Image 1 (tube, one colour):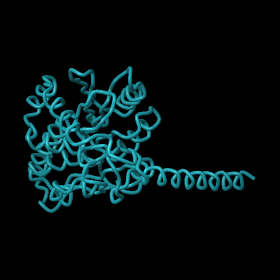
Image 2: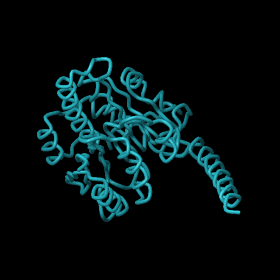
Image 3: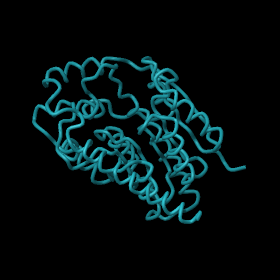
Amino acid sequence: MNQRAAHLSNKIARKAQKAADIWAKNYWHHFPFGGSPRADRQAYLTLWEKAKAVSYPDIEAFETQKGFRIDPQWFHDLALHTQIVVKDSVLCYQHGRVLYAALREYAESRKKQWDQDKIPQGQRMLTILETGTARGFSAVCMARALADADMCGKIITLDLLPHDVRMYWNCIDDHEGTKTRAELLAPWKTLVDAYILFIENDSRIGIRRTATGRIHFAFLDGAHTYEDIMIEFDMVRQRQEEGDVIVFDDYNPVLFPGIIKGVDEGCTRWGYRKDVFGDRQGRSYVIACKNAVS
């Protein structure tokens, strides 16, 4: 009886998941950001100039501490096409600087360790995981970090948004008509082709299917609920070793209490050292580094 009940429960769960997948595909494949441009080109340029003018001393201090800073002109140009959107909240894309500096530091530390261990060049490769691809900004920033570090690696980035379906993206490119994400990122095609693997899937499924080995560095920026944070954190930590890193964005107790609870609980439960810092907009970031197993 128990086996029959378990079989029936699994069957129902599979059907429910299939129905959810169909719904998600229908939604995310059919203009989730709207069926027409949200603003004209000049409006996006005005938003960009305003966002660029804001200074972030805490981010600058973080870059100084890590010893690496992304090229600002390249960074802001990427942001114009992938981060400048029409929305009610304040535009801030400084997580790209955080990811670049943190990953550059990690890559350099790996190089030193590989040199000490005399690891052959063909075996020197980093695996990076991201949840919440969106338009691809963060993944491209991390690809730039790998390229600048002269490091081999792959960036697996997961999102329900499709990579090869044309849509309006609520960005400056919309005035040119609908584009796929691949077309949106065409100016950075060299980096994309060299490093990034776009996966259209829910993170709960996608991590299990695609990240089968070690995850050296992760950026978890998908659903901002406590449950999702804990599920993603748990799956990633099982694939990490001492010194590996997870970066969290939007560490804000007012706007995202689920992130606060999940990150704090996960770091304590699974042995991660937590470095929290913020910017002048009240947005905070967490660099979680895995401790040695005692």
